[in-house]
Amino acid sequence: MSDRLGIPVRILGTGKYVPERVLSNFDLEKVVDTTDEWITTRTGIKERRISEGELTSDLAYKAGLEAIEDAGLKAEEIDMILVATNSPDTIFPGVAPKVQNLLGAVNAGACDIQAGCTGCVYALSMAFAGIGSGMWKNVLVIGAEVLSRIIDWSDRNTCVLFGDGAGAMVISAGKGGGCLFAAELRADGSKSDFIKLPAGLVERPASHETVDNREHFVQMKGNEVFKFVNKVLPSFLDEVCEKAQLSSEEIDWWIFHQANMRIIEGVLKRTKQPKEKAVINLDKYGNTSAASVFLAFHDAIKDGRIKKGDKVLITSFGAGMTYGAVIFSL
Image (cartoon, rainbow, N blue to C red; front, side, top):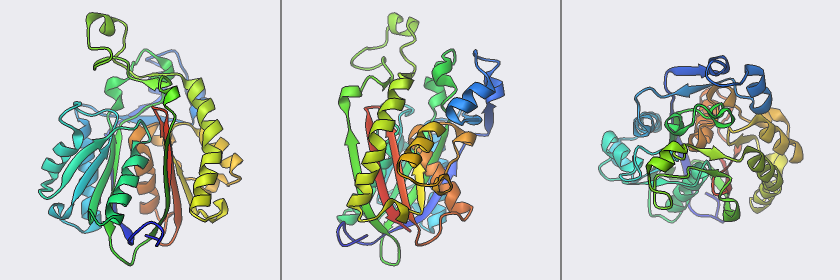
């Protein structure tokens, strides 16, 4: 950590788990009125993973276990488990306590973070803050989704976008690691109807009507989301870089929420950054919501792109509408 934000922090390990089943755009051509060309041109997605029988807690556990092993820690050394998800097994109990039990992390607290696809950045920020304050020493942060269970597979506007998966990071206190330069979280609740799961809880309890109207599936105003993100994200990321006292050119790697290639390319263009500095894997996994940046970060760490000392910006946006970013070095 920098002196501005707290004590030194290290990212000790990362993990990932994706289901075995691959659903390609060509497979989707047999399900809904769409084509591989249409999906690829508008989103950049070629395929996604689909869970068959595994719960969100199962995916989260497997990613978390790999991250702990990669960190060289024992489960009982974890102080807190934060799981960012929008597709929990159940509203309560949460995913995180189940993962805590599966891991045998007997000394850890555990809770879910729900902030749309930005839950990953919210959870990361909370982990950094908890460690920086001295409250926690080792935090396991997980993003996990089984969105395929809450997608309307007859709606070509949403079913082509999403995939299942989980990614994880172990963040720890201690010297000899990197530095958190900035963390910023925002929301605009006036646009809370842009992405929603309408029914099943307090506002619209489950009924024959809500089932018949297919209100238990994700609904999204895609064009409105696209316009909102392209309007707010470039200037917001400029602000975060300024807060970090870094120029955008000093950022080595940009890890965006893997939602839409056109959004990523548009933001890079407005911030005058080359596409080569972006970590992109949405072609393989689709939009995995709160898991997407963790999957991308893990892949880039393991293939050697991101190295010790590199400055990384992670940013996401999602239902709420929420958005946020963190900048740190390894």
